[in-house]
Length: 555
Ligand code: OOB
Image 1 (tube, rainbow, N blue to C red):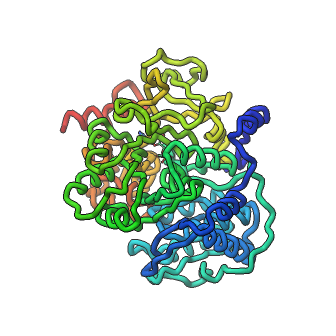
Image 2 (cartoon, rainbow, N blue to C red; image 1 turned 30 degrees about the vertical axis):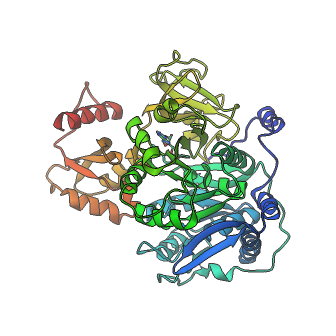
Image 3 (cartoon, rainbow, N blue to C red; image 1 turned 60 degrees about the vertical axis):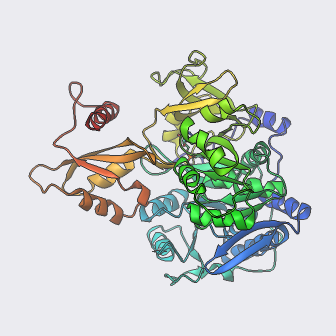
């Protein structure tokens, strides 16, 4: 853990973004005040907490965020504090996040799927002073998880729990409902300062923290709302876990707020749950990962629910190929918008008026005219950021711009390789650029498995497997999967002279170490050794290529 919290843009670049009108110099708190003044009576958020249905107007959301900010302040939460947030799709998510912004505290957006190792890691790395969570969600006791995190990480002083009536551990925790106090005048945070930390999908080890500022994120929110055609009478359905960058801001619940539109928080993204909400709330727009889009498209033909309000469905997080892309619009009676984004910044959208050819075959083009995109030779890691491959050829995508970070949070060493010296982020994605500036994602150079939008860092899973006493070595790779696009396969070399562990034993072992379920290997193959392709030590990349070739042969 070293290096600065946030690598600022060079002053002359920041001045350019301000002059161009990208950065407004406004914090999220003052943004909400403006929205509440502009749309006081309009519905901002609809959702369910346990058995209770909530429907809050912009004025009510603003009021709650003010009172909660004062309550958090009363508890000792201060400007500059990091607060690990683990909430499912409950309506409280929005007032909580906006209250933290108002208090100048920074939410660290954990996903509901994260477990002990991830929570402990992010709490430690961010030196969080509090964890804010839900009592029980999907039969898992998040109160107990938060308490265990606080016990393990000395910076964490408070555990705050939203009571949904689902039970679970609340010993030594503060009820969220108790943080309700008369609004205070709190100093407005610096718009160019840190607003929150997102978790990276990661390709090496545990997730990195992504520091986003008020100015940079609000720019991407405003432009996303515009590019996705949101209006005050739009209704956005947050089907995916709302703390993820896609349903948060692409255009997401923040984009909906910006447009004066309502956000409906779905407790689960399956067609049965979501279609009922689409019909009841007259949902106009939502965002889905490709496997869900496929499930929705399949289910649409059989449903009795009225989906006619749907206008736009965004699909992204993982590659949506032309075949699936072609099915979505006709099946759901809406326009498809592809989105290729990353929590580090850059977001690409196909535009609503793009020709079908581009919408079906590309993942969109950048939000901003000031997003700089370079497509470079992937085999030359030292390639200067200006040496680009020939037009139309695939290459590694580098980017910098008004809402793309210049460095991860306190990760100087990692930053030195993930960013070029002139500030470009190495996305690790392989893309081809069309003459129109649209990007087609054709692969990846980073060590990552994209499991239907959920990102798995192979080394993280390998480390868990190698902690087992009977495991000598492990290598995790992605193998093609018709539903998820890819799923994980762990190749495991047993320790000589020991027991050969069964796959089910290893899966349970990894689960019990406390990791998100999507990281538990889908397949486990026990192998006597790893194929060696050269002389001496096999590189990870060669190993993966050899295993992938073998997996393909065996299919
Ligand atoms: C989104 O964000 P992250 O941070 O979970 O993951 C980013 C990575 C990208 O670097 C790329 O490898 C992959 O996810 N990805 C796609 C994709 N969208 C994301 N790969 C192929 N096709 C796509 N359409 O996943 C994210 C953030 C904001 C909006 C949408 C997705």
